[in-house]
View 1 (tube, rainbow, N blue to C red):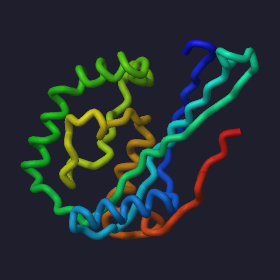
View 2 (tube, one colour):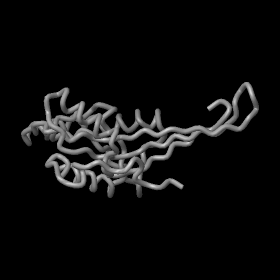
View 3 (spheres, rainbow, N blue to C red):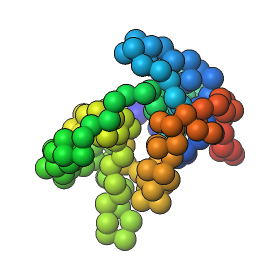
Length: 173
């Protein structure tokens, strides 16, 4: 960036959603005539900028955060056969999706020569779009397994996903 450097850090949950996210989920579910069962905070993107102002040569630091969360509304589930068709749609575009993502954000993460899974924020079983770039994030395989275990509890309205968590559930010191 002109005049400075941008650093992006991803923190992965899953965590209980902060109050603001739960409120957004309540509105989202209500708009779609569904009930909120729970909320999962999946990841937090921290953006830091260090540089100097163009007008004044003064050092400046700035930053922001963007939380990625999922609302577990009581959406109907897709029949297994339909879900498998949607999964195949994802599998057909997965490599080109990763290439496009890499052009925008840097290389798609890889561990030991194996690409990280793409996690569908709104899962396919509950009608998530399998090819929407805004519905997919790269996630470490072990964290992806945690997300997969947490989603059924969230949709069932079980703890801890049915209660509000802290504003910032991790330390980034």
